[in-house]
Image 1 (spheres, helix red, strand yellow):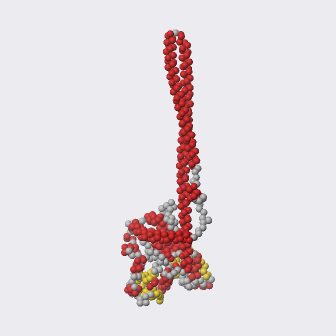
Image 2: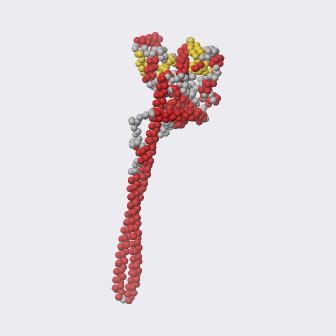
Image 3: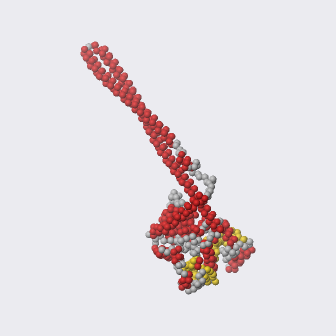
Length: 594
């Protein structure tokens, strides 16, 4: 079996030696790529190809990492790719990662792609608990990660449960509290809603600005022993070398800034650090493996070079990149302002449209009510007309009866001569007839007056009908109203369709524009300083809100150490300044005695 494996490896090695190309797979934080490389290529050739492919110019932060047995190694730029101790199987896998970290992300990271790659890498390290992050900071960082991915919070779109599938908090933080996923989402969303208006780049930068203050950010740890054989941890980062207790990776016991170190070397497993102060002795420590010493030396040299580079005037390339970044930022700011104005105009147009629709509905309701009133008026007029006609007919009938009574009276008078008795009877009947005729006349007169009143009511009903028709015409004419003066001045002609054309937009960066932008940028800096004062208050508020739900028995040693540092008021920066107050000689002596 062993001979078969050896022969297979020998065949693979023979093929690689006699082949003119080999395949590699490059894994970045958000993509995978495959390349065909020439056998003669050095590490720099492959690294430059990857950087060109992803559009990266700030190459000094990054490297190509590969696994070697139980540790990792970085591809050397001046050495052939195949001369490294890389896996024999193709495609050979390399991870494109940040090898060195900036001291201040906002000042040093220029390109958006650089910032984005750092954001993804630091976020993964926090979620994988390679960097310790306290619970309250984890919630705030999660809210910025959500802002970077989803943009501004919209309650109508981001319904409860929209973060259910997202990995936003370290498992350690989730297990530390008696909180459901819904409760965590509510806390994160509350912070997320406050980030309205931030772009993806701004949200990612805010994430990095908070993360860079975490104690384990950008630190590479290695197990070492001093001369006395004490087990210790060596931490290498952008500021210098730090010595830790193996049980406490948050607070170093001693620190040596890069500007105090003159030379670094190793022989076999022994590492030697020569301080800049010539009166101070060289201090040494031992690592577990020779391969680890090589890695430590690479990280020390790279971090020391960047440390000194930050304190010199920027190169022409960096100055050009920063100038381009400022112009791009100014252009994006103007673009955002333009979009904000268009958004405001669109919102105004939508509000105006809603108001017109509301007014139209109101007018339609009024028209309907007026129409109903008109119908009722017409019905009343018809009823009154019918009553007037009946009254006229009754009056005619009464007049006819009165005429008949008069004729009867005349007939009685003619026959009155028939006898006295008959005369008396006739006189009595005549008197009764006269009384009846008088009553009929009065009733006829009353009916005539009633008919006259009904005619007047009919007249008034028809007048009401005419007014109702007139009001309906007025309402109908109002509903067709279209604003002309104010809307025409405030909105472009194509506002009703809410399509804003950007094809003919140009930006002319005049001196006045740049001065105005400079003033706005300065104003943003002042605003940020004010906001940064409230950052700690915001973190304390988050901590207070969830403190009552904490399960003390689930606290990890790092949680306990962080709480102790918080109670003492110790931060990453204050601790570093405190450790470097003593002389280099006394710190070296302290290291030897650990």
